[in-house]
Amino acid sequence: MIEKQPFGRTGHMSTRTIFGAAALGRVTQAQADGTLAVLLEYGVNHIDTAPSYGDAELRIGPWMDRYRQHFFLATKTGERTYQQAREEFHHSLERLRVDQVDLLQLHNLVDPEEWEVAMGPGGALEAAIEAREEELVRFIGVTGHGVTAPAMHKRSLERFDFDSLLLVHNYPMVQNPQYAADFEALIDLCQDRNVAVQTIKAIARGPWGDKPQTRNTWYEPLEEQADIDRAVHWVLGRPGIFLNTAGDIHVLPKVLDAASRFQAAPSEEEMKELVAKLEMTPLFV
Image (cartoon, rainbow, N blue to C red; front, top):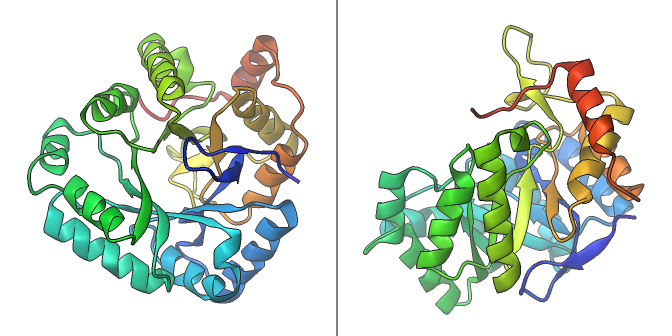
């Protein structure tokens, strides 16, 4: 089983490894149901999905009749205006077959112009606040990719008291001094405010480049269990943060297996060895 910890101020004890439902984007319902069995086996109790994840919300919907109370359920909106975000969120409720989700996140909010729209009058944030007032959602978060995500998240927290955030965290990315410094400043702020921190791309080896894409991930993931162990344990070695799983149902069991056996973070030397052996590179520069 995987360790649980408080998901920020929400009151929910979430497994430190959260199911990234992008893995369900292009699978059959039978494959999705097989994935549910894996999640239950490891005790995973938190799902992170989005309407942009293909058929993921449709695949999760049938689970909710029986397992809604088992999962902290999070979705997102990638829209930036009030009306579009409101419509997208209500469509998500229909696809998920629920009357309420636990967390609604403003998805990949890192572009400064989009940020001004979403966070300003008539923006997506107003739709999220309205949904919370209507008890269609309990908490509000923000997510982001790229090297500017930590700084933009800090800016978002200065504008609104978000309950959670999500961003990239893996060993190659923190070799970028600016990203590492911005990440640390953000973590300090989140700890002060008890904001939940979700991290993604733990097992990213690097971009696919010229290689054939053999997994349902836009980046090349680590494949060998020992390598996945090292990358997952490095992330989990940071107290208080969460690791969201990779977007492929076949890699998922290896990530959950690694998380279930976590005891301590690997050393700096071990991580440098892993990066050199596999020629790992950061996804964002």
